Length: 270
Image 1 (cartoon, rainbow, N blue to C red):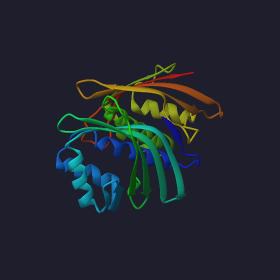
Image 2 (cartoon, rainbow, N blue to C red):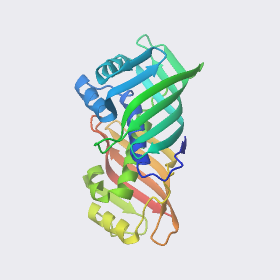
Image 3 (tube, rainbow, N blue to C red):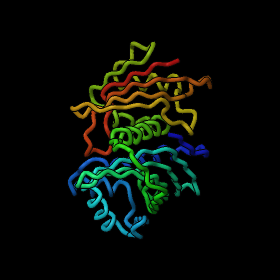
């Protein structure tokens, strides 16, 4: 997946967290109550959706569309994402992807699609989707259905973590469990969340590249709702030098929660 957001804008990672969360709500079954809660976290009251079937406006109609799609198996495989900031309150996201579904009669379909999201920042911490336009580019023949929930769920979480790591470290505790195990290469004294934060602040480590996205990313889920994620990030130390970091995370994933939690974090620095 290629990621492009040329402006050095700290809200980019929040927008990407919302974008990948939007993908994932189609990809796992939820009760109507939970689905409504997740929708309220992602879209404005006057959400407008335009696709091959026409245009619908408003959360009530959007929820009905979600409930229909939840009768299918859905998968969103993102190829490219481009972010453009009109101002401090609006971000436009364009994404190229392969969308797949499996109908109740087990017929599988795959399509090349382009998504256009307009997100706005209001009084909420996260931006919300106000406009969504879906272009069906072409039909893809003979493509086996591949579930992609775990990928989109984890990418949403990583972008949220990067935002907190850069701009709101005091809130990082939200994404760690009470018993998170830390293993930071060369720093045996880091055992608890407090130790981790002290290490980060002492060395002034941050994500110095606002175009940063996880590289060499791969992920899998175990039967007990644990997600294993492996990826690399370029970070920056207080002396301005770039630090290449390799991450291995184990996440506890209650799919009804907004994000998973980290129960094990290993970082190798080179």
